[in-house]
Image (cartoon, rainbow, N blue to C red; front, side):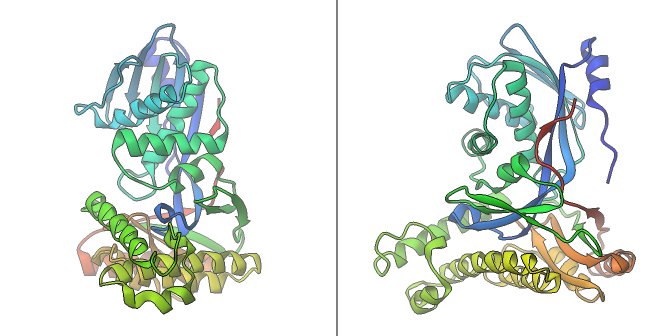
Length: 386
């Protein structure tokens, strides 16, 4: 776990005075329930110790100055007439949050801010949602407003959908806002009902392995898969009047009606329907203390994402295959949108050293790439830390 840079020190150096507050918002790893959130289904993510931190101080005008330590760049904009920046695209996460907050009727004040982060960018661990969540907290403190954590997640999702231009579901923002240490969060993305579920805290670890392959085709494939799921609903609706989302199709009903769907729509729908059921089963086995059964569900999820949803890639498949050869690995799967990014594995603590050594060697032999490993625990959601 990298040590985060102190944004307060950079703020002091850059703006000549101490910040008024420092906020943090975590990245996340989704343990199971992939590509179900925009189908209004079930997800099961955990917040991570990797986070985005913002040191801020309010201004007495409508100007926002944001310095991103990782880019070494500052973006300056007015809260009046907010527009996207092509020159500083990273700033659109801050601009977008300001846009949706103003649109929702909140009176915003300007601020100076410094942003630092430890969420690996492009890894699929949701640095974007963490950035949005931290920016929302910063604007709240600058403006003297307070937003409910669930509404904060909804507004940050809206910023990414409508301003940044990524038509994502609610999961990433929700877990960044409401994560709980040593727990994953079961979320019904339709009703927004949620509950924390304890994760094993002794004897096993979550090991995230980064392919270090840049994401490719993620946005176009994401939008294509979403359209294919919507098409499945349209084709099933004559037999299921009133059907709105694949979350409302049981496995038994899907098996009876799947002949109505052409390929690849049928395989896309199969993944979503069976993945929702895997999430529900995962909750039951974890609450029963059965980590091995949970690991088996993780691996089944990867096979479905690889074969039916077709969002994996050779690098992700190589990591999962290598992980499953190590004794003491309960399960492994890709996590995130796919086509690169990371896998997450449930690994016995005693097996962790061998896991990293064997997976590194096998993966490099197969891909000529060097993986990165992060041994993680579930962390708290967004908060003020200074």
